[in-house]
Length: 289
Image (cartoon, rainbow, N blue to C red; front, side, top):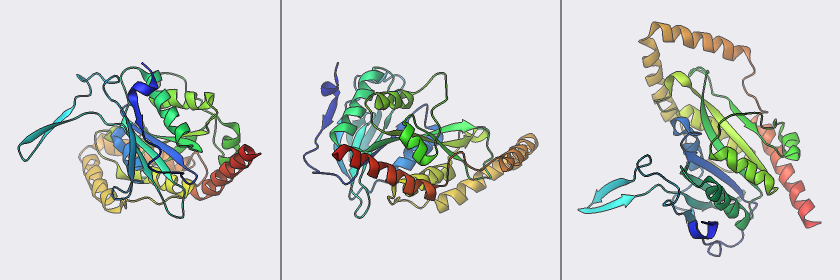
């Protein structure tokens, strides 16, 4: 099986893009509480975005684990399969975005990753940002930290990021990062922490933190205001904690530790924005020489 058999991509319908960057958010192991995929989705305007392709789900999923959904509309039944759509969002006055919100595959990871790399190259994306969320020992009462890494030394220097240091089992995002590095495509991994004691709840505050960082760094507008969702879910989270004395004490301990440390592991989003744009400007200049 090769990429041409699973990837459908129509680049001629959109023409040249303005300094495009690709965002990748995948449901699954690296998307706790769906914070990552919701953050990527916050940059997509359904009325203006264009779907330019998709990755065929059939070879990549064990459908006893990732089951399709059935729906009925006016008496007509339809099946919804796991979707991996490539969406182009033009942003007047800002850079264009190429987004992939998909589902982490169960099989044929190499082909799936090759398909994403092919998309990035075909649409001439200047960089790829994988977005994730992971369970961490952090309190729900604080803004969750966004951390990042990149194996690109120039990009690491520009943004003040560290090199990837994690060792152990990984998801498709980790495999994708390695493949992008091998093809000399600048890539960044960003993730936000989710309070591990509330993993089964929603965390719009985490989604907003990721979305805010991406918006500032990429200089593109986000489409969603999470304020109301944050307030509503904060009330829900607080109610859960108040019913458990031991959990309440544990959260206080996490708060004290969180406040003792620096609030973020990477520079502020405002600082990153100028540095990221300068890096891509330099990259364009080098390519034109």
